[in-house]
Length: 432
Image 1: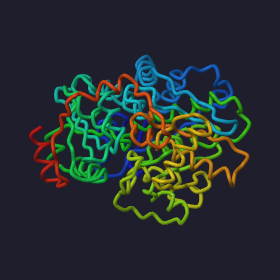
Image 2: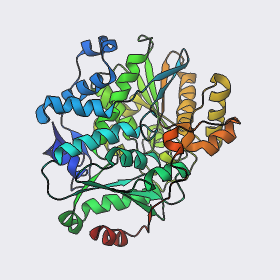
Image 3: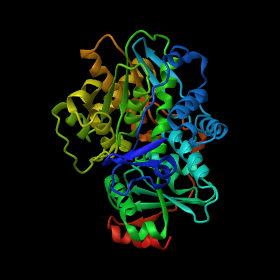
Image 4: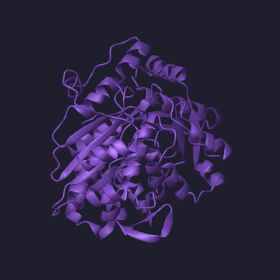
């Protein structure tokens, strides 16, 4: 497997370089130089494959001989050793539950895969690898769980102060050991900017071995494609066209769906569902991309004003707006509308959905108005208990908190306060 930067297709990089660097020096994003299609027989016989077998087949096609076959199987099995069940609300409406991993969020798939892959590539290195990750909510918890006590790797998580839920914060700040949390006095975009600047700073990169665990890292993106295929496998009706409604922030999840489609997944299209941070739906409607500071919402993991993975989306479509909008439709919703979605799903289907999934649900229902003859798979990206105050107030019912999350409530938070000035972050990191 070879990769190029979205800013320069003429220079190719190895998978190891792309994964361990995270970002190219030109501040682009790594993309596979070739996206192979899986054989049609694979999708025709998809019912015969376990989830881990699907993961392995995708890895084998994309990665090839770079990693020994036995190791690739081990990595795939570790990444998906928990389920991603499809729950049917009605004949045309399905929920893909992606919260059955250790941190109760879809990002567990990518974090666990990445930790295994980086651990493999890091074998034999004398100097520790420092993983930098910005989080708007769920990424940090997944990365913390995925990399916890991984030999030779330490993790620094930057999160925006007072802009993640209480239990999300506890997931970032209570593990200790090789996990360090920085509470940044700013937004997610500020956190992400600090991480990107660190990778471009020659003093830092000479002094430390740095990599990223955000969806800017290709190792996060590859495993997120697995569950789109797993969802398709579980659909009883393979004849009605399928669309995936994807709650979106940094757009790594939707980009992974596009990757699965490029590899042959029979899909009619994708819905980019956002909250008030609607720069991509706006682009899909107008052809103009206008990034701006993020707005705080109830669906905080999607509070991104300048999505990094939009560069990958442009790359997949050769920056051609009229072709991209044939495959992707965008919708955006306010917090008030999001709460209406949470309540409607509960009242109509007795299903408890989190605010992010509710945005995906609303988008699919709006899409259905113009496309009635499709079935939709809505990605439920986090367990509703992670947003317990909003959900309980909206549905008027108690939400059960899984034990692995509940035990964090009384643990002591350990976080280092950090401003948005890069000089201060660099000074701290140089002494880390």
